[in-house]
Structure formats: structure tokens, C-alpha cells
Image 1: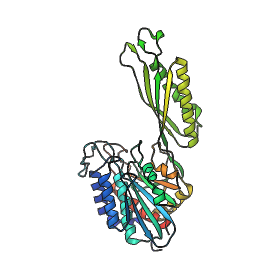
Image 2: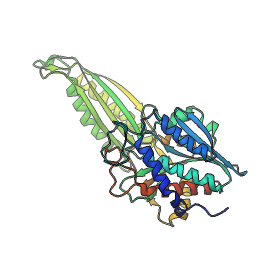
Image 3: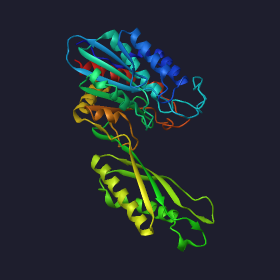
Image 4: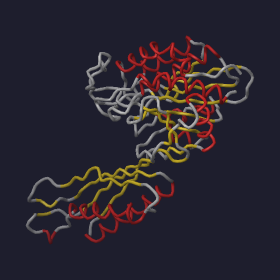
Length: 389
């Protein structure tokens, strides 16, 4: 095998990568609406000699490149969608779409994988099958693009031995690569609670069943779940995001509603949280004579990095940037639909520094750091070369 990809090998393409990234940033598309972005990606891949498959699970695009007679296959995924946020960066390449912007860096993710795609198509320094997965709808909690692509036969049509993905990481220096074996990002679930009481006049509470008082008791009782029911060495979050009830000061409401966001890092803790939330709500409602309805909406599972694939990625990257320079990533309570892929096959999700002074994700002042482009593109190129060596 010839010399493996380095950051220096991608430097000549930096201006082109910046131009691509700025184009994507200026023309963002929401989840499920990535038609122009998908066409842009597909046209690039076709021009570079990839077999291109469009409309996979919606606007998903897969580019396949077979080289040599190697029997291994690898997939690398980038997400393409933007968010319903009004941009406040003042950049000359700021969003041209009112109320929509790339506030999570998916424009950078897509650009880095395109940079690797162009380099690998030119050098062809591997033997096997490379599948580049450009995914729609990562930001859509209700209609995950990962799930949609898998339902459309992603891994049956494009079988692979492992899958890799990446997200930028505000707060870490640009170009810094962070990894963690095992759980990395949290499972995310939503709980919808309706408390049915007995409405009436505010001056006669003894004739009513006050669902707001009951809901208040539930809020306080929920705070004990993590502190008293979950192993103190584990991490979990139960947040009451909304509580609604009542229409007037002199009326005791007929019902109240609550919505909870629940985060966990293991299947066992996730199941325990569900069990305890149900018990707390039902018990508190019984105390007040109210009737509860509880609906659990399971979101993305835990991003759980396979140890072997994570160690492989770590060694491949350290060959490129120096031994010991891959940092250990802390647990991240946010969620990612890349986790659905990992339930089907081994994979590793990586974090790439976006700058110590970067605005946080999903913020109107956020922008992907162009200084990370060549590092990310070189990393994907080298990982593919090493995996298919």
C-alpha cells in the first residue's frame, strides 16, 4: 500500500472545501427537505467516479467506490440537514433562507466527507468497498433519517463490516480529535403525562381534585429518581420541560399536562428510569385521587462505540496526528441518531474540535470552523485506507 493520507495531502484542496462549505451554509435545508443539498452531493460524487444511489430513505445519498479485490467494506456517514433557527452571524456566506441555518455544523460534516471522497477517488489507495452515506433528517426526532435509510435497505443494499461517523465539538481546539469507547452520547426519551382531576370553583377546593397541586407534587418527587433510584456511578437526567393547566385564577382546572425529557447512558438505567417515572406519577396521583395517563416516546438509543472499532480509529488517527494526541471525550448528554446504525453493526462515532471560542450548537451565532475541514477530510481518507488495506 502506498503512503496513507495526511492532513498535508488535503491542504491543496482547502480552498475548494471552504467554497463547498460556504455554499452549503448559505443554502440550508430543513430535515426532510434536503433535495438541493442531496443533488449537490450526488453530482459531486458522480463526477468523481462513484456509483451514486439517490433517494435512499428520503433524500439520502450513498456513494459507492469499489477498488481492487478486497472483501472488506466500510461505511462513513455525514448528515446534511439544517435547523429552524434565524442566523445571527453576520457572515458574508450566511443563510439565504429565512428562519433556517446550519446551526449544528452539518454543512461542515458533509464537506469533510466530500473532501475525503474526492481524495480517495483520485488516489484509490485501498482494496475493498467504500460506502459514503449522506444522511437526511438527523435533526428530526420524530422521523430519524438513519432509521429511514435502514428501512429502505441501507445495509442490505450496501453491506459493510463497520460504520463510522463524526460530529463537531465546540469548546475543543479546532482540529482536535476526541473519542471514547463504549457509551458516548445519551439515549433521549420524552414522556407525556396527563393528570385528570375534578374541576370546580377556586373557593371550594375540598369539592375538587386539583391536578395542578398533584402535578406540583409529581415535579418534586421526580427530582428524587436520579438521586435515590439510580446508581450514583451512573449518569442520568430527568427534566420537566413543560407543565400546563388552568385558565383562570378562580377556577380549579379539570386537568394538567406535563412533558419530560429523559437522558441515560445504558439500557439498564433507561429501563429503570421508565419504571420509576411510571411509579412516581401513579403513586402521586393516587394520593390526590387524580387519574394519570402516561405515554413514553422512545427516542434515539445510546451512542455506544464498539471497543474494537474505536481502538482501530484511534490508532489510525494517531498515525496521522501523533501518538497520544487523540483526546478522551467526556460523556455527552445530547443524543444522535447514528446510534440506530450501531444497533445493527459495530461502529464508532468521533468528535472533532470546532474551536475553544465556538458558539454552542443550535445557537444563532454558531458557525462551523473551516480550520477543521482538512483534518476531518484527511481523517476519513486515512481511516478508509487503513480499514480497507
